Length: 344
Length: 78
Image (cartoon, rainbow over all chains, first blue to last red; front, side, top):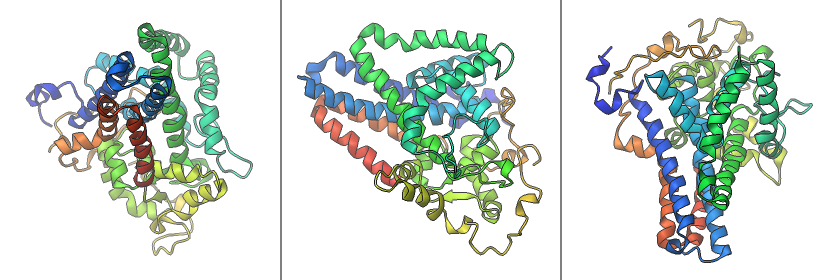
């Protein structure tokens, strides 16, 4: 292993060279927020002459800032919760706090929901981060999930977890401290201009959480089954769009990510290549596109059931479909020894 | 490029197992710090920043049209 002191100075704080991308992404998100604030505060320079023009700008900024700040937390910071990007613990802690406030989250809260609740119980009854199930086992409507989950269900579940000690010793005390840090950081735009903060800070965070992260969480696991059901590799969906994975830190390799959450995001495509035959043999859930198109399909207004069925059944790559002929598939495939993060 | 940093400690979270032998033996990703990779990874925030700053040139209505078009295009190809 190379001596870290031989790395370029700028890369030395990072655990892996590729993690520089995560910081660049977040800095550009903050710059975009700052640019929107500046334009709001200097309306004449951008032609925001009346309420209609201002509304057009707010809607555009909410779409753009909500999109990127949702990805910044739900994908970019998400990687950091599994595998810290810096070598120094204090830098990880403080950069984390500065990472998620621009997505409307205290870092500790998001980390708790994702790592301790979602990853530890994916698709099981205790995983309250995912959509609720209908009587037939399907996820509730994506529209209902996106409208009700953030912040309402999140707030109720987080309050319950932090007051009952789910998450470890003194989790409530730590959560309170992190909430105070978050409240301070989150209030900064309000000190400058309250209407600006509501339009270009709170509204984009609504888009980030309800639309970007909500639909992402939905399609990552829609149609899946928990490991406790005996279906070893059906808890998560994998998305193979090259464009999507290049621009989204390989988050499309979601089955791979849940199998090995500590694996660096840059290594996920290689893990997919290595495991592809096994996944095909065991009927993993794989589609050829990314989350964006998947979300568009499952959110079909005219034919919601058809959209859900298309995504969860029809669009699965034939190579991975359980009804596809496969010479190596055995009836009791799920009972064989498997690659797991602990046994491999 | 070769990986130059030791694998960081991922044991902070009990629910998050560390990389397996499979993970450690994976080949390093190629060109992980090239300019294209930078632009690619940060494509969406760079696009958002460009469109927001572009309001200074073309006004809010064009920005809105481009923002909606971006969502529509990415919803098809992404």
